Amino acid sequence: MRQEKYAAKTYRSVAQKRQVESCNYAKLFVMNHDQAAMEELEPKSLTKTTMAKKKDDAVIA
Image 1 (tube, rainbow, N blue to C red):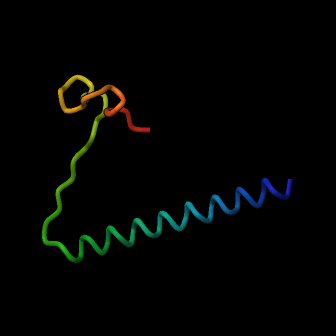
Image 2: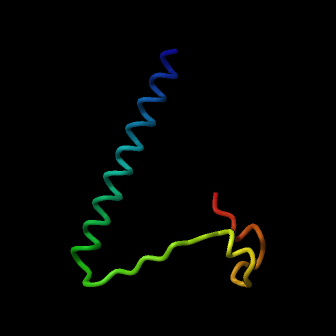
Image 3: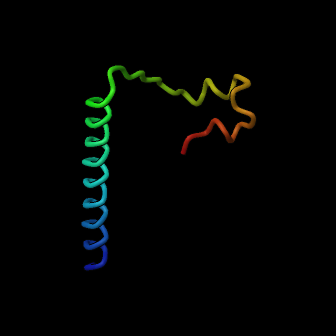
């Protein structure tokens, strides 16, 4: 039981650190660049095109 609680606490801690880091990188990026473009990726549509060589290339885990 202790190990499960410790693992859950560690997982939450790591998740929080990743979220804070990604926010910091995004903020740094926006402050240092004049323009930014964003693209929405839909893997289902990639399988129908020639962009994905194999079906596995278009699958995002």
